[in-house]
Image 1 (tube, rainbow, N blue to C red):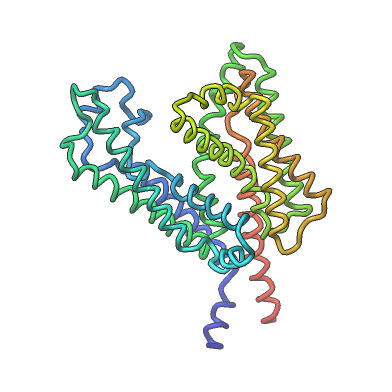
Image 2 (image 1 turned 90 degrees about the vertical axis):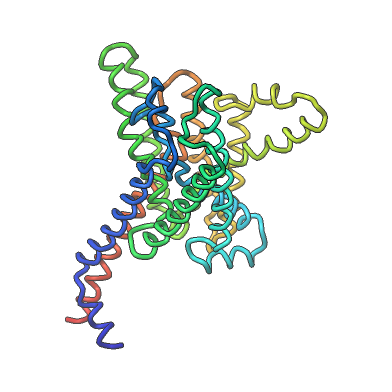
Length: 367
């Protein structure tokens, strides 16, 4: 055992960092590769008749990884709500499991199976009765879709676990922001081009980059100044859970509407839309609530002024792009995505630095 431990300490910190980077990059590549493998049973000749067929076509992009991380994110969001609202014993149990409790995976697989069956049924009916985009519409095709997509969801879970254990940063969040980073790189040029051609005013571009710089600066300041590495969720989850809670509010309204045969969603949807002042107020309330819950659940709660600053900053970051979008200002990403990208980048940098420092400390001890 002593020889094995000594051998491990002799590994260069740069090699350890290279290995962790390789695991992280490999996981990302497998994640993206699954999105390029088409679902089995599709009739590509029929798909070719569509005007939007091609690499950018919606139906042509249907792959075994088409669900992405949506099932996992939904299950993890429910787990976070359970942890925040449940007793302290549930919170301790969640921390003991590390990445997430095992029941989260099973819940994600259930969500993936339901969504996959709905997608399969929609594909079979997409031809409008004139033709089918499925080579042989049958129960077998639907089962293949369900099995393929649920298997890929389990694969994404495994990739996230491996990156967390042997890579850099939290695996789920690394995968979660990967597509956001790619979408950011592809969506910025279309925003810049109209301004360059004089079709759009320069003010739109100024607002976009001003919002981005201020938001990133706030997240970096909060993270570096008083958000400990193990409290990164204080910045991540409140901005993500607030819109989810908004959607959950509409569920009881829809149930009452169906029970009374009265359209209650119509009048409510006119005011509870992104950009409306009532929608913004409710999102701000939920964001503040989740920030307070996260702070209360942490081992060392932050003082009042710092928590107020975090809540106010997240509210502005989440609400600003929605309000700006309502005024026809092009924003290439939502606030929660911007927070996620910044926090994950900070965590990756911090973990890489920790690996190098740990290696230097081991070298100094040997000397």
